[in-house]
Length: 327
Ligand SMILES: NC(=O)c1ccc[n+]([C@@H]2O[C@H](COP(=O)([O-])OP(=O)(O)OC[C@H]3O[C@@H](n4cnc5c(N)ncnc54)[C@H](OP(=O)(O)O)[C@@H]3O)[C@@H](O)[C@H]2O)c1
Image 1 (cartoon, protein in one colour):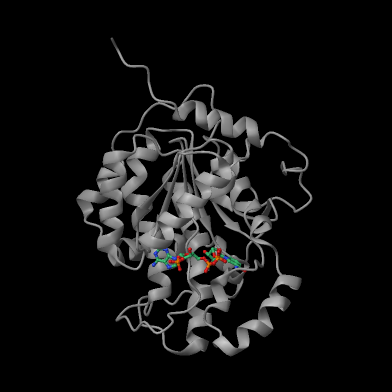
Image 2 (tube, helix red, strand yellow):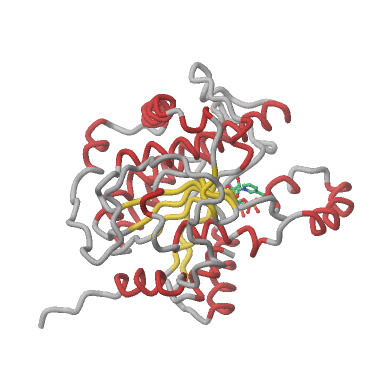
């Protein structure tokens, strides 16, 4: 739904999916539904660091612009896979961490640009144990815990990324889509139970279109740049528990993630290269990345109060148009 909305607004959309068959089919459907031919599939398996690197190389060599990077993919269970590492952390946080790192130079030359990390309210139950961050997860109890931990990692990642990117024109946000009627948990329920649960899920959970609104808001809403690094739900910035605004933990996670993602010190420095001066017409992103935690009633713009999403998209798209060729 997020991709469809962006395509409808005329953006060039790269769908990064692990299955070529499903990814190509989704890209085809999105082109049909949006009437926008600029929707393409590129292979990415977030469980594999090699695949993340291959995707980044392919993307950087074929796509001159990256204005909005949305980390939406996620898993809630390891299914039948038995990996010698924490698969939930790998797919939900380490893969996106590495990808962000590898694509940062491109984001920096496309400012004002954004990173949106789709997290979850489950982060509130997360507790990061740095001594066993990458331990394999076994059984549904450990999986539930690892899911919450990985979503806490998303919130801390957005926070630390905002700190690291302060003044660059790249801003980032953690977004909770709400309880959405999707395959996230249902696909791991026994087959015989699914027909019973589906109607219930349809009744009580948000439709995917509703779930896309907060990630879209974080991707497009004008004026939220001073809230870079914050957590959004229902298109509003929200308070997070102490564990999710612990700057020391955020920095420690950053360092641990570099190690788990296999980032070399030289690559770490590389992402600092190519910074360009910010677009003077762009909204300022130079304010502190973590301004005072606002109360829920503060008047931050919401899609209801601000009809400007199309304007922001237009700004992004205008920037996305190819430069005129020198004759
Ligand atoms: N649903 C909710 O209630 C809810 C609530 C809070 C937060 N969220 C978050 O929302 C995001 C989207 O979840 P969803 O509800 O839309 O779940 P979903 O229907 O299961 O979609 C998850 C997507 O992630 C992709 N994916 C899984 N493993 C991958 C990998 N190794 N590499 C690349 N892509 C991979 C899946 O691809 P395949 O098609 O190949 O499986 C699928 O397209 C997740 O980050 C989730 O944590 C969801």
